[in-house]
Image (cartoon, rainbow, N blue to C red; front, side, top):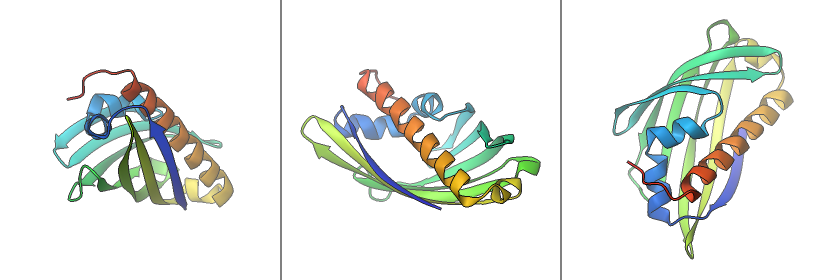
Length: 151
């Protein structure tokens, strides 16, 4: 499954990039996020509770960041397991571009799922993933636009 989108965030690029590296902002923005811990400058561990169709599970996983092109672009890869519900793994490439006093955030993501999740069907998985991505960016944009300081 692949997702592509872009969003305009009413904040300068350096603030958007800082917020993308702030575990508290990410925890508040990720739908169903129960825990998010920074293991190192390039690794995060998370626990997220999700419901996809009839399958409800808590996923534990790791995300690794590649910041070689930062702050203009970076990528992330991750994988998580939800026990009997299955697993998910994937990655995303993110690009940040200044647009006046705002920032255009563009992303392209790929994900694979297995276990019970894979049996639900591609359309349900894709629509749920798009809904979750939209919720994340709506939450993230609201956090960044609120003008708080990021660590």
